[in-house]
Image (cartoon, one colour):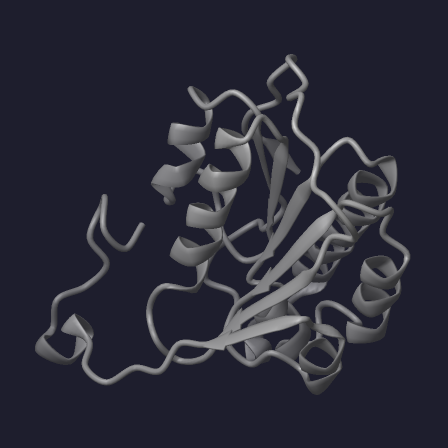
Amino acid sequence: MDLIHMSGKVGAGTLTGHGLVHVYTGDGKGKTTAALGLAMRTIGNGMRVLIIQFMKTPDFYSECRAAESIEGLDIVSTAPSCLVFAESAGPEDIEAAREGVRIAREAIASGRYQLVILDEVNVAVKWGLVDPEEIVRIVSSRPVGVEIVLTGRYAPKEFIEKADHVTEARCVKHPYEKGILSRAGIDR
């Protein structure tokens, strides 16, 4: 586990009513970007946000560096590598995903955060690193006022059924098709 940023000041804002569950899925770009936008809105209202990255490493993704200067935003990356594939997932990948689930369970139950984003958890489920029913149990037992976002391609049906808000990003055209790979500041 690599803790990116833990700001000390607790925000004054609180969500009204029961927090909702969002799923951002699909093969198009923008799922994590949408979650980050929601995080900025939450922080802007004086609330705290935790992002747990299941399939990303802090040395590659610039939101981790940005979090260091954003009060109220904590990012934890549990992945040993951002290039985990189902056929090559090893024991260290499974252990890292379990650590992410443990952190999520504790953070959500604590009520310290008004928004918890499980970034790429859908992919971790697809690759067999995370049990979807365990995530559903954690999400179902959240305290009042805790909003949850589950991101990544391949959202399992259990997440879709549990969610209050589901957005599917569909790829129409992508720079990868032209050989333009991941760009700092835009894709990572």
